[in-house]
Amino acid sequence: MIYMGGCHCGRVKYEVEAPVELEVTKCNCSICTQSGYLHLIVPESDFSLLAGADCLTEYTFGTHTAKHLFCKFCGIKSFYRPRSHPDSVSVNVWCLDQDKIRNMKVKQFDGQNWEQARERLRAINPAK
Image (cartoon, rainbow, N blue to C red; front, side, top):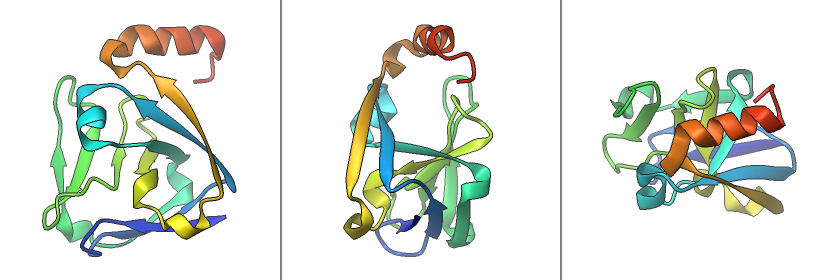
């Protein structure tokens, strides 16, 4: 299914190809908690930025691996390049057109203890 998304002011627009049944991640790290971000991680090939590349500003912290992208007009981070999946895009599911979302399975990620949480995931599923 194709989902349309973007920032609050509408300058940043994109489309994402994802399953009808969404599997999303809720992270408890400081930036995700404070912003209420809910991750839908998709391969880069399933994400298309349609408008607003010139409206984005980047923020990094810690290891500077994650590339947090915000609309410089409304301040919304509707997608970014995550540290956990640097070749993918994390889309904020709350920034997608909500009328197409039928069901979401939410899994938890312990981003406060990022390294240990990644190792636990790798032990369960080495492909992650």
